[in-house]
Each structure stands twice: as C-alpha cells, then as structure tokens.
Image 1 (cartoon, helix red, strand yellow):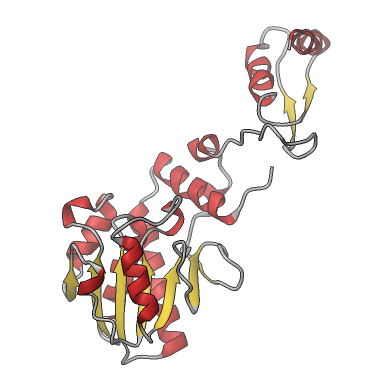
Image 2 (cartoon, one colour; image 1 turned 135 degrees about the vertical axis):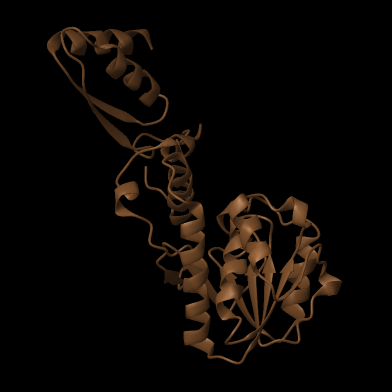
Length: 258
C-alpha cells in the first residue's frame, strides 16, 4: 500500500507525539520556514493577513507572523475562540504573538486590503465539506485582490496562488519547507502507522491492497507471527510467511479455517 504525502505527515506528527519529540520545536521551524519563503518570494514591507484555525496549522501561522513582525505589517485572525485552540503548542504561540490579532474572527471582520492573505485553517486536519464560519471566510478571501497563500494543504474550495507545504509536497507545484523532522523518528514505527492501517474496499481486486512478508517464530514461540498473519490477512492481499516448518504448518491450518 502506498501512502499519500498527507498520510505520511499525519503518521509523522502522531509518532513525534508518541516518542516525545517536542511538537513546539517542529512548529517553530515550520513558522520560521513559512516566513522565510514569504520574504524570499514577495519581499519585505508587505501587509500580510494570517487567517488561522484552532489547530497546529493555525499555530504555524502564529509563529510565521512572529518571525515577520520586523519585515512586514502583520495581522492574525483566529477563526475560533481563544478557548477553542486545540493544542498547548498553538495556544503558546497565540499568546507569544503580541501584534495585531483578533479571535472569534468572522468573514465580516477581515481587513483584506492587504498584499498577502495566508490561509492556515486546517492543513492536513481538514475532513469533508467546509462548514461555517470557515466557508464564509474563504468566500471573502476569494473576493479580495490579495496574493493568496495556503500553508501545508488548502482547505476545500480555496484556490491559492501559492501553497507552502511542510515536510513534503501535498499538492502539485507546492513549495516545500523542511521543518527538521529528525531522521531517527522517520526510521521508526509507531502508533502513527497503526492509525493509518488500510482497510480494503469491498470492491477492490487482488493486487490493489499490497503484499507483506512476515518473518518470525521459533520452536518455542509462535504466537506473535501467527497473530500478525491473522491481522494482516484482513489488510493486505498477499502474505509471505517464513518460519520453522512447524510454524509454517500452523499458518496453513489458519488458512484452511479462513
């Protein structure tokens, strides 16, 4: 099974939490990278509005605003209440931003007579149809003449001039910012992979759901590889099993019972 860039990002974020890597450090690097890309591409002295949601995508926007405060005229709009900010990292960076900002922002509140609008509403956390008040906010942004930017992954219906993706390209043509995700985490398996387990569609065909090789077991121990085989049979099409002859026969018995 091949994973999309969005799925890989969700896995990476989940595993960072699982292994205790500071999300605040990743957010700081993300915001710094976003700010640097905006300055490189559009220059200093611009009026910039960050339209942020209550999750970590919004937190990235808060950090970027802080890095831009000496080179641009920046205002941050939170399309949610302060109490709705979902993570401690995003909440901390909302508090650290001392410039122009407004919580509980609606479409009517946005001052979009600016040079650049940066959408940081949901990133990879968005699911399904955009609801209110976010839908009205996006419609209002579209009516502006500002340069339109999206951070990580645009929300449905948003048509930005530039997408700044974190870690990897989420949409074709996006500019990618390296947030310094440590290789020691990228090489490990964690709960992120469990969350991303694939359930085959009932209409899928053989070969569409991947292959898996399981190596394990001994004369004394056979439970773990047999459990792995049983679970894998519900997820992938083909399983290759390698163990001692006795365990191989047990797997064949499992196959006969299925």
